[in-house]
Image (cartoon, rainbow, N blue to C red; front, side):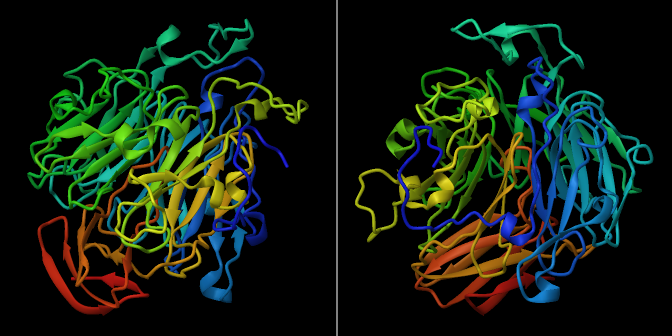
Length: 545
């Protein structure tokens, strides 16, 4: 078995099943041998129900300048038709086969017709694809958008409260199509250049919906040009200061992160330093990439977890509920296990349904690592490969793990899927097989798509909640869901963005321990609320007004 500093095998809690269920897909990265940075950065993926048949389909992004190899791919989940988990590739991706130099994807119903649309970020012109009852058409020109820089992650969100979804795009850098710049590592070998070596950062953009299917670039009027541009890679939308308005956090590479506080009219002020989210506890900027924004310690306050470059560690910022955050990485147990990895895509999930959120990280280097004695030298791309990691949250009393810190690197006992190194990038979560737990989709740069089925032993019940929008019937992005039961309360927000270049399924999953019946309180983005009482656990619950 291939091993590059990875753990020994254990119980198969997360079997990798992509090819077994028809997801035979190898990422084209566009590598041509000249070490152009865009080829090592992609690419993303999405879990969403494109045909509205009740199960999650898969969209993957490809990269490069070859118009055939770079075509994106769409796989239809046939679970609702056959009763078995199996995917079939849609011919020409049902019109979503964009062949730009792909980076990321965000899913959201921008025209409120009940069908999820796609925004694609590219190294080059971004694309907006409208879903017409299961077939996609390119609306980039008609919507008056199409940023031509280097887009990374994007998110749909109603940022001005008019009921229509806007689009925030984190941009990376100004990079010529074929850069003549070159960099070398400490051994003198040619290597990919980092963001601070030769390139200028590129400003993010805000596309505000005009309500008629078109958008206006409001980046300058929104205040996004009030600070120097940064190397944006990850983006998430949450109410960071608890004033009832959606704010935007951007994970920046090698420079301070940005936190854009919204006044409610889509005008922003950058306050990352005031919130103590710009830098780590040592006052250093890190190579921020993937994002988790959830309550990770069970205190009903928003926390932030960011993935970083090797030798930096990933970082956990614990929120105090007043808009301030504190770097608790070392105390959390996440410092040492992440120091020798480069993390990209990431998700928080309750793997074993005990009531707290665990973490899963897709790892893969940007600079080549050392060869292990049994490394297949005929595959030089594997010099960037690393094992993914699963961090078990042990904060709940009576946990099976005796630890003084909340998170334990449980990868060694999470199964063979965590022993096979790859160049992990995008990561999306969702209940693909509708069995009540969260499965994980991971892209590999230049490698095969991975689908990790959650077979972790369960310690309790669960609930999957979907919230329908008021206008079109698809996911109500921005909705706040609170699940209440005799053992406590859990709160989640249905949001776009998060992770890295990818789009999670529009579902909220709650591990509930011994609870069998719960009350569900839902607040829609427009402030409408509804209480659903005595909902049985173990179901997929759809909340509608």
